[in-house]
Length: 514
Image 1 (spheres, one colour):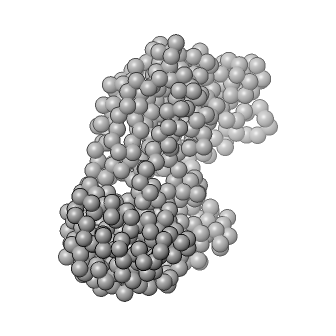
Image 2: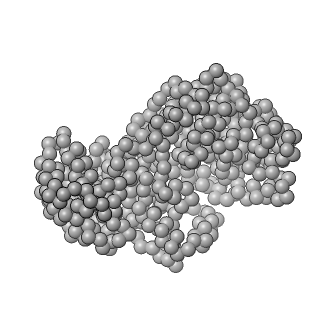
Image 3: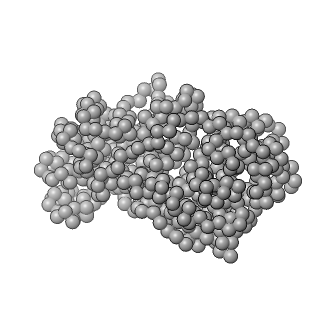
């Protein structure tokens, strides 16, 4: 713990919070929070504060109850994985009160969401909490997170790493995908399993906290309505490689020596360094050469079948959840229709290939192809399995497996680039990717970008940052600072000509200067 201030100030801060006029309530709450909690850590005043605040829960109005539930959740989580800490013990004494308030609440009340967040921190009372949860009308996603938050690790059969956007979203995974998970878990030490379990619990609680934060300050979050399209494994078709890459061959270059490539069926050959890059099912893989002594064709085809439904999952579940969490899009203001309209309105390509950068499963490749014609569009992603779904969806659009840090295109060869809801997936490469976009765009060509910026609010930033994923963002979900994005664009020779998007969405169109 760190020392925040003199303990005598706690009573004054508590009194100020409980008596503040509605217009001053948020400010008085912030002063109280800062005295007891800073960036996820307790201060020395946390215990004296909860000793005063817990009894006050019965005395304050409904909105202040919601604020206190949020604060208690922050403080209890700061002691996790210790479930018997000094703060937790004091807060837990009023569990009956919290359950009673929750059972009589409705979704329209901020208190409902704040109590959902708070109650997710008491695994010792799992059965009692879930019994009440069954009566308050939780949606599947919220019930799934609550159930996991209150669960205990089974070291003999650990289920870890599949919690975002919510655990039950993975119920329809194919057995082959489950085996991929089990194989990964078998590589972990008991300590690593335990650490990932703690990270998973922290993430589902933080998601509930972010939702509660929005409800207290902006109103009821909208429910989630996932697409009910049946899950299917991608089945990309074979292609006439010479024909499908012909409109883009002028732009393609070797990822090793930067010489031009010659496309023939199943292979892209470089005359400069004698590299040969495999093409399978309309997907050119520039990350490996067939001439380096390994059978990469079989490796590539294996990757295409590995976790074959993941791109579907990303489009249907993960991307909407990222918008809600990272963009604070809890009211679904930024809808797929809004996104599609923006792309169609602001995409202004000059002559040349229109690149869908980090295209994933092709959700927005579809929009690009319909807007400018499939023969002009080329999709790029680092994951073959995602591109397999894209090729399944749009067999008339070719794809390239490549790293955004080193785009396999000549200088000033692309007519436009779109990177939509993807840059946050590779934050360490983002500045390099934007520089590459600037290098590859032709003068006058446009770059449409949709990603997210960090919240200036310490509490909301903490909730977002608390999401840790086992194979990316292990240290917490890292988004961008607006100033960094603006600087990277300027350094790439790109001038922003349009800004849009509410809350924490960063949606821009930039143009390459002459």
